[in-house]
Length: 345
Image 1 (spheres, rainbow, N blue to C red):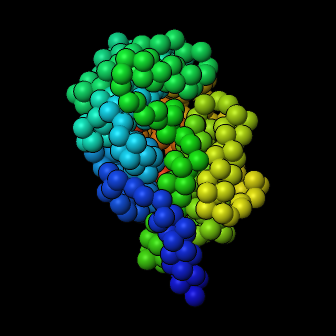
Image 2 (image 1 turned 135 degrees about the vertical axis):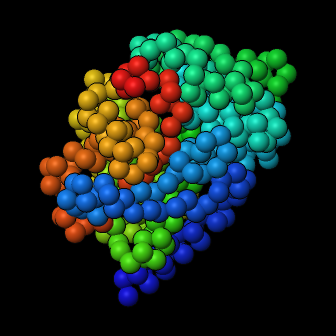
């Protein structure tokens, strides 16, 4: 009966989301796979991975699920360019650039310098930067001020004055529509876990700009009401992260005409290391463990810190050995090459 309820809840969630059109840029559903070797190594709980690194073109990632819906507006508006931004090795920028190439649009990226010190000589040239250039994106270096979207807006205004029709993609594709789009991942987890014969005790993932966690929390409230969604703060800004998640979740919930208690938003602090984008020993250990035991490639900025946080929660006995816990692999493998020196490889 519980499994049938999961399927029915997932169907209702999909019915809420379906009126919002998408471009089908993503290959969905992404797989839900057991992490048997990692789970056995840890002695429980039972671990699973939702492979959001396999969403589609440009080496995939969680942002493509959001862009699938958000960029429908760009096409409908007749935009001729996408404008977004992020740090030098931003996974979000790569996915925006790949989507622009797929849609035949120009791409302009505000590349923030100064948020973190380059960890090695490869940082400015390889990984996501290399792919952005291959996808045809124009890179516009700007100084990091702490305002995530100002330089993106200013770049869009500059392009408008030059006669272009730009479409602004916010930092991290984090908007209420981006969060609504990501609720679809919770529907998939509900359906797939029912097929595997379990209900997740928790869904754990890295959380930064907020829309991924907002969508998962909204979706789980509707399709997996007994499942906790735990965001691992990777920015060393847990209060800001939680506030952004709550705002984005409420915005997405309003679009679906539902309400979700803010108490469902859980952000786990203390796992970001010295700061955003800085590799710490726990993250390095998690990356190496995932590679050695499961052939999973995690990045040092997002998914690696997310798994490090999950491992810490397991060590703190936050889950029972018989619990089923789903880890969201948000992608980001290209950044490994840019962090080679920091990883000691």
